[in-house]
Length: 187
Image 1 (spheres, rainbow, N blue to C red):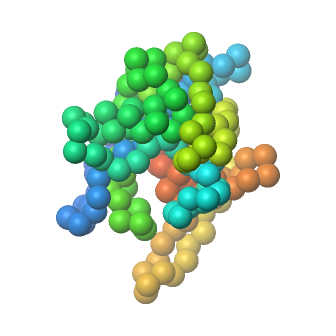
Image 2 (image 1 turned 90 degrees about the vertical axis):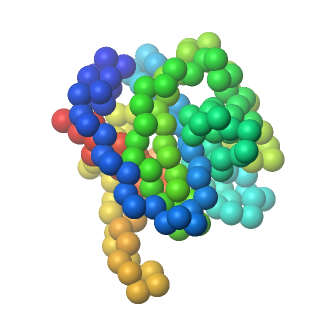
């Protein structure tokens, strides 16, 4: 998928409205950093450090909880991306915001899509990130690669998305955000 194709699909569709989020949910934001590669747009993902208490070793987006000094959710996503993967905020142009989602860990998570300048270099912060890698955007947005499973948790049915990539599974909130993004920009 090229930048022009993504912008046409993303900007021509009205964003899905935010669902009701519990008042006790902690605000958080993540960045879906996109790079223009030779074969089209690529999504930058991370694998969380295995020593972390929450979600060790899982594939994720750079991002995290809102801090008092953050002036906006977009600022939160950029600040966290700089902390986790060394992304210079000046090298990231906002393309849009996706619908907020409530996570099982109690966050109201707002995802942002940003176009990263080709000159950007990423350095994983070992305290938080084990690995930074790229996946073709077209691959992760291909709904044929999304495996949906419904399970019962605490008496309620939940649908969980899994997306395979080179021997690992992208799942949880990361896959849920990608699934939502794919539905929004599907042809």
